[in-house]
Length: 326
Image (tube, rainbow, N blue to C red; front, side, top):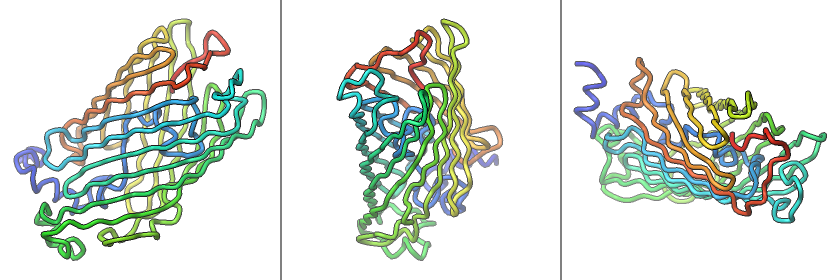
């Protein structure tokens, strides 16, 4: 029997088997969070990019491996405030110096329920007429709940999880994120680290043994090809010692500054197709992701909806061919 059909017919414990074997890039209780439209949420992954696109409200809903019992479902909401924009600077993206952000991420996957709260601060140093060096730091509080009544048979035989069978258990982790970025209106390059302290500050039941720090590199390039067409390329590399390295690439074509269409790939794992529309004050996008032909790591498709709203409507392109999205 084809292994993919096998998992589809035995969803309830097939997903658990995938976790047991460690085949998924987001194993270890799904501690690696994904959004395929990562370029809309740069500040979540790197506190140095908080307020990079001005003062905004951002959010996404992600239904991963749709149709599989216990598959991850993620909800994210954040607010970013650029103090230069609030002060009415002519070009806050370049001239502003400080920004803050607060975000909430909630995810359910299998027997786990996770909630993250992150508060970040970013400061900018103007290097030239068109370049900024951005530095940021954040505090993350993560609350994880384990439902011992819903353990799969693999988890029941795990020496850590079986201790919590038949009960609800809670674990809280406090840690820190740091990041830096070089930004220009046409490109950016950033390096960030999540959980710098390795999840050592833990309260409650300890059913996850470690939270190693995760290193993240993001980059992007955008260019107007004609008055009606712009090309945007983004990349994202992630490295953590207990999980496989992951590289993601996205390409978007922006048409008439109103509509984008794009495609991307999480290399060796999944391919996605996305589209959306934008105004000067808002953008909304939809993405569908499916596993690559030879990958059984993420059976079933993934749906993702994103939204970004500008708070103060004060941003005005300095030049006619400025591009409004990453």
